[in-house]
Length: 333
Image (cartoon, rainbow, N blue to C red):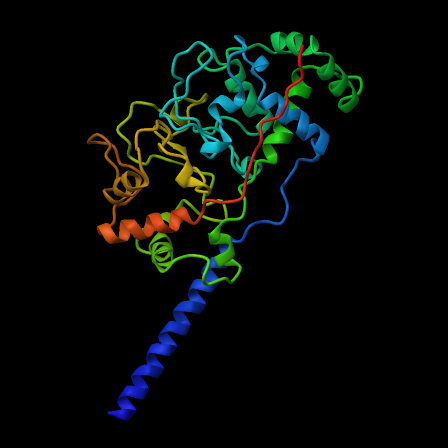
């Protein structure tokens, strides 16, 4: 009996060691990058990013001067808003749930349907869309040019160009590339601190990367593969299927969102139709809920209530705890 007990203990230790090594190897794929990627055409400049931040929070970028970029992308809510559809400048809901701007420097293509290739291109859509900011760049240039401080800053940072569509977009995009999720408890676990997350969260991570296979789409340190899928929502929105020219088989496909700070970003999905992380997990476990005849790009999986709690415990470790984004002081007219 002593030999059997010792053998069993040794076998248990071996299994634990193998599992621990496998988990450690798996965690390496989720390490944070050391640098933010900036394009050669728009290298990082602290002053340009500061100017871009002011523009991001300035309602003068909307036609009615009543909303700003931050009205739909609020840093307090994971750079989204806590409602299914944000309100546009005309006081009516926009078409889709506001996507997060967290880690936008690594996202490509951008927007729910993937229609924008760069942050500069992306910003044009919401600024000029009638149901969003409803502005024109000629109007924005006129309003900003009436502000002495803006005139001085643009001329100094963009010599010979001043305030125009190109420089406004460059400043906005430079700031948005600095919107990076902070270090979370999950990151400390990745770096080797076994006490950084709970046992429930570790079980949830095992499910996430194992039987539930969430990692097949939510991969890497941002937890997204930057691809588009039909996830089986009961919605008429064609997603990337409406782009010109229409892509074959792209109907109902939307971008995989990253999961950083996900616990702050309810409600979820491109239409804001799922109110909680539990609803999201149950949707995927059921294999979607699309109308008969549609074949979503997801497969269901069996899961218990306790396992749902474990998955949520893991997802909550992706939220940073030390990031604070104070609103800038805007120049007066």
